[in-house]
Length: 195
Image (cartoon, rainbow, N blue to C red; front, top):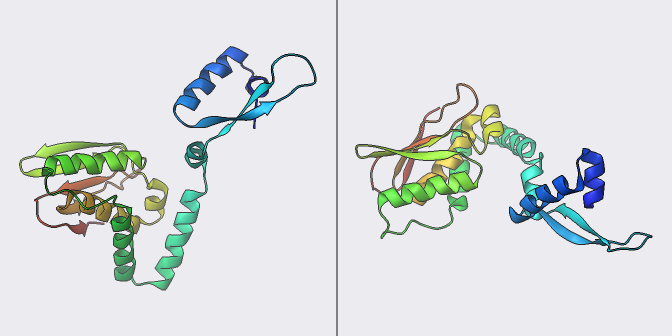
């Protein structure tokens, strides 16, 4: 836990600059106030700041290596078909709920893109004729995808569950991974992975 003075000293910034940034981080939910520190002198006690649970998740570096190690272990214990089926089940679990039949395909595709953005993707929706594409400028699982692109099956399955339609994975793995999912019709969800 840190006070404004602690942070100002460590970062070599003014108190006002630190307060400005802490206010923004507090509004975004990244940091939170967590008590007071009483000094030996007179005056008001200093507010203590700490990372919030959201901030801890944002700054954790453990998720990618743990996921990569888990995938390596699963790959050693399962056939490729078993691993793909397992990852598809994971994707279905991640879907918040079945798509509402009253929503248009366009709305469901936009909901899937929004969910990917909430998970750390940077996506937009493009429409070409009767086909929609969720095009990513980034991948929420890029480190794991760089190690083994089988993990794309989970995200493809997640998208299929949210849109309730045919989804074909067309991710770009030529450099830094970028997601791309093609949604072709309004039939019950099925997924196709291209790797």
